[in-house]
Amino acid sequence: MLLTRLSLSLAIALFLLVLPNDGPAQTGSIVHDPTDMVDKYLELDVKGVRLDAISQEALAPYIAWKNEPIWGRTVVITSYQVINDFKQWTVVSQSEAIIPVEYRVLGSVYWEKASFLPEPRLERIGFRVKIVGDRWRIIEPILPPHIGQKRMINYVRQAILDEKDQAKAATLETLLDDLKKAKHEGPASAQAPR
Image 1 (cartoon, rainbow, N blue to C red):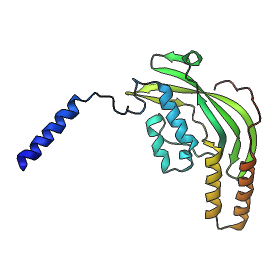
Image 2: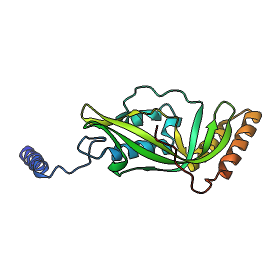
Image 3: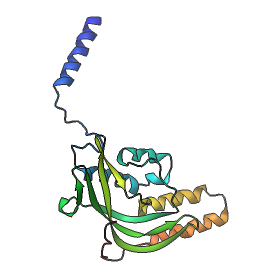
Image 4: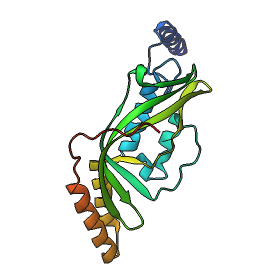
């Protein structure tokens, strides 16, 4: 019995050694395109990871800063696009580049008053990425959360359910209505990357 387990363990170990090493890549690995890392960070941001302090730890593999500022507002978007065309990048050095990202912005939620300010536009922001250790990391900008409209609507719905104060719940209901009505008006020109 012991010999059989040992033989099986040895066989599995040898099998794993001869397998090609094409498994899942390490997040932000320098052998991969840095746009993949930027896209993964933005995907998490759109899903609302930065709305909750506990879930922000999921962003650690993508960013160089340690602490997220406390934001007074959240930008509400319909979509984003990481520009994969390296001709549009600003290459700073072999280990650093600025990759443009375009957001279709609906507006901003201001948390102090639980209000939505519609500001539909196409916003273009440059993300500075740099090799830190053996990974690509986002160095800057440190932006307010850019959350997808559907996720923001669901977040506000949950806040309404959790709110005990009727006046605050009514304010959140107004915010929810404003978020549902928000639309991106036609094509707008992009702002220059920051």
